[in-house]
Length: 281
Ligand SMILES: Cc1cc2nc3c(=O)[nH]c(=O)nc-3n(C[C@H](O)[C@H](O)[C@H](O)COP(=O)(O)OP(=O)(O)OC[C@H]3O[C@@H](n4cnc5c(N)ncnc54)[C@H](O)[C@@H]3O)c2cc1C
Ligand code: SF4
Image (cartoon, rainbow, N blue to C red):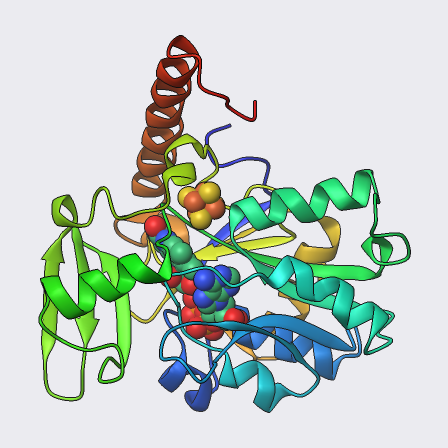
């Protein structure tokens, strides 16, 4: 299946206006992790928190909803959240941990759950993983080049970044700047070119912007735990949903992009093998 195994697909958004204001899309990650915390399904969540350097995330073990909200929004560079899961259990003593993860991080987390090598007593404490869709990611130096040099702006003035409609967008208080994606190619992390997972196939609940209208998110519930918490959050009025079949562009676009990521990665893997380069598959 091009989107991985899932139970239900919907278009959704958080109903809380404070979350809507700071979230990247429909605020599903923030709303679900906060709800899980309130319901004591988790005792804390590892998120990509802010740091002193603009747009350079630092993993944060969030113990309150306010801390989870402080990490809302997409940072288009790496946040070593997987490392902080160990910290959450070993230093904070959490027994039930939630987290947000891009697909490659999810693969790492699921591997530690199958083979808890150096993660003994950590892997079984991870109770909820909200996965986010990911086409590519950028080293921090690339982000600096894109914003400072290509867009003649500055990371400290940037209030939001987004990738969509074929462009890389940067918003400041009074400007909306855009770069065609052909100008960002080559700046992404090289490893992303052999990554075959677009929709965070190994998550409990996956979410991203593609498929839904602005301010809304596409959500795939995948595991029993993910389906159960998402349904509870909808029933409690924390999240509102629309039938994805009534939403344009809906799942066909998500399927198309997921398929194209897998096909491109297969071609790149083949060519790296032919060149004698190592590939991790
Ligand atoms: C590198 C990257 C590429 C993406 N590419 C796509 C794409 O091609 N198509 C698509 O539909 N969606 C993509 N997304 C996902 C999208 O940008 C949103 O993150 C997602 O829709 C969640 O929005 P939200 O409003 O529910 O989240 P919010 O409520 O705003 O919360 C966002 C959560 O993501 C976490 N986060 C932010 N940056 C990172 C990071 N670098 N690594 C790990 N966690 C992070 C934050 O800690 C926060 O908890 C990408 C995200 C990232 C990080
Ligand atoms: S494209 Fe794949 S390897 Fe690159 S950051 Fe996204 S999930 Fe990770």
